[in-house]
Length: 183
Image (cartoon, rainbow, N blue to C red; front, side):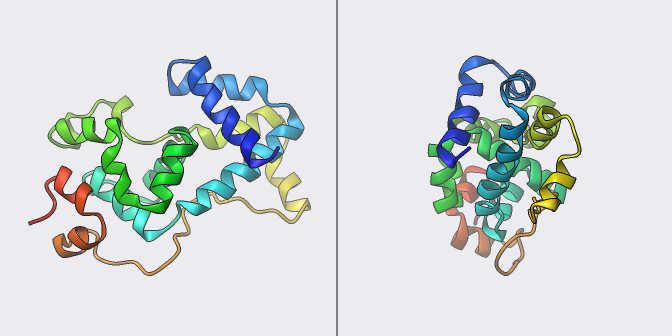
């Protein structure tokens, strides 16, 4: 499965079904075992492109500071679930998240305490799709091929103070303004 086929499957899952759980089930059913291995590799490949401190900073601001390692990992999967065009835009500029209707909706809710569980920008289950479709020990197969996929974030670059309004203004000004985090 090449990258185009990966994105086609992710985007088609959104057309074929109506929510994340249904999308996961659909993906699990349509993937053959050999495609499942490739899906895991492609998911890892694209996820690594959004595994930066800049992207974690954006997720942190959106999630009101509630963005642990796991939360950021699920955020990356959610970002993949938005489709290729959105993903590419956000990889180029994390501040582009301010343009997403769902992110704007979250900002309008007045804080994370007002969000329903389904509102959170995370898609934890996407990581399980390949393993469930493969129906064997996927990690062992990947390891035997010399492949290792991320199981938690390993952000590139140097970290900074995510809560510092000056850093927010300099790095993600539109998101900062949307979530009231800049002076």
